[in-house]
Length: 384
Image (cartoon, rainbow, N blue to C red; front, side, top):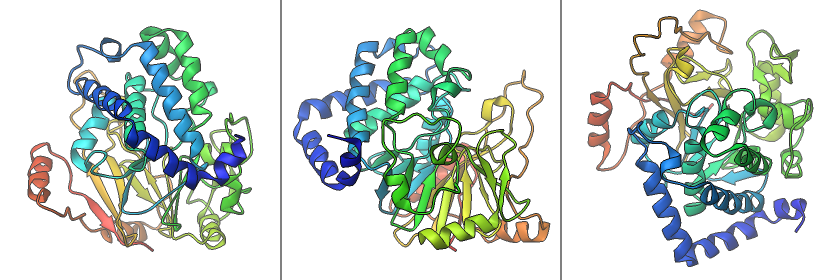
């Protein structure tokens, strides 16, 4: 079946694949066992994934999950309520701490915005936990591609060496083949667009994203690169050359125009570390989210996720960073990237956010757990 056919018929294929997985108890049992084994690595730094999963098993799981990715549209469409997760960067222990705070699949529906590997030590662990959850509960977790899920980046910033050390270079190529099949954007309840990087001058219709053929490898310019690399800025309203030397920077006016053109209420993206784990762009039409704390032990940032309830009301759950090791002495706060330049306006944006309210019988238990671990109360705001 051609890639375009996969994208156009994603709804029917999804239903078919869900039925196959649900009717195959051996697949469900295998994934349950794999998830259980991966969870033994949480809070256990004496072993790594090599102790619980062979290279052959990893490749078999990659083949399963890449089939699911190709059956989904390149623009994954899902419904709220859902929680949006930003960069993880191989911080497997912190990912699990975040799960302790926000809830786990399948109880919670989650969409991840990319950058699972590099910088941190456990990129394979992060990927395999998410992939096993995807195979087991494909309608409860959505996985998008980040700029670090490309060979030109992850060969430099750690993932290549991690693969070489744990399983051998060959498995790195298997991961690259899978990365080329991961969807590149998500659409929540038809009103909230998600991607790793940001907007593009070529993004004049959501169908353009749907029609991107996969497998694909982003090169040096164009829509694919922009979805993974572009950044917001508060320096103006239009398009600007990126300080990264790739893709663009875009201002408030571009965001407002895109929301109007694409019939959106909000854009959620990741790609940049921000001090509170989230940052609202001036105008409240775009939010950056970053979901692990103390990034690379170079920053003192918190982690956060964005929650959308069934009415598309926005809320934030935030986890404060733990104390850094005594050997780390040069960590610093991150600068703002796109908040309002007017300090009073930026403060008003921040103070408009209200605490997220956990519902159900576990609310009190979750509150006590959060207080015990020193995690910051969640913050929220209603949709613009």
